Length: 337
Image 1 (cartoon, rainbow, N blue to C red):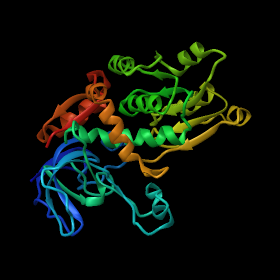
Image 2: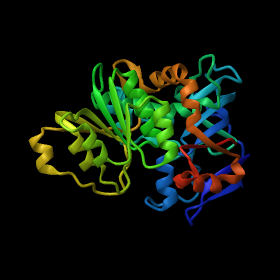
Image 3: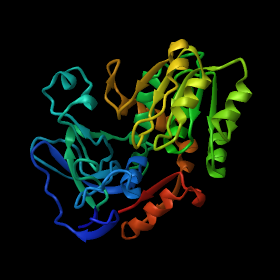
């Protein structure tokens, strides 16, 4: 099979690999779509050292191609892949918080991912998609599950006023998740025209070019919750403290390259709650992934336009370059192995 792997220069090589065979309890997928995530771009830009030889791709939709012993999934079933697997035995895994497991594996980041024609995963990590959701659409479930967890942990509920900092795919999906959680007002910051257009299409109540502009518009009515989705080297945590009301909360979904500035005095005086959010897990008896699938099904027509570019696997470096350059209008770039 053809697969994309990181090389020592921080780019990707398309190589031939044996088609993997599913072990007992696992299944093999024919990969139909794999999205490029902001975390992938941290490796691509050199913010994190790219793991040479690793096959990336953790936003995956596919169809069951073969099953190992003990697996009853029908061949051809369209599925979304939950790429995070815990050890199953630690206290975090036993309480449903396997995203905190110290021995967790994230396929495509710390284990072999889905930028290939085929991949194998534990059958328990597969979510059959309901009627109306194709295998290709399944690759949107993973980033949406990130936002489902993030908005919940940040405390978004009925009547909440929310600001989303950043309108890449995670910011835009957070807008949808916040509204589904009961937010009555959702504002967003966007630096690029394509992001502004998508935020408007998804029903943002106001779209601003910066946190300062948003703060000026809010005036004496700061928001209840800020969802930070930018990360990197941005000063968005400081912006979030400025935008949130006393006693409000900040959900941190962005991945930062290093220590981030936080205005400690204002943070303390306002008694702000800052909560980190990592991937997805169980919440209230439901898997974040299962909630994300229903949210995608209900909003498919509105969310499909977030996929702005699709590339074949052979053009993987062009796909990454497009995703990294927002002047291309890229929001979600996918590969179709």
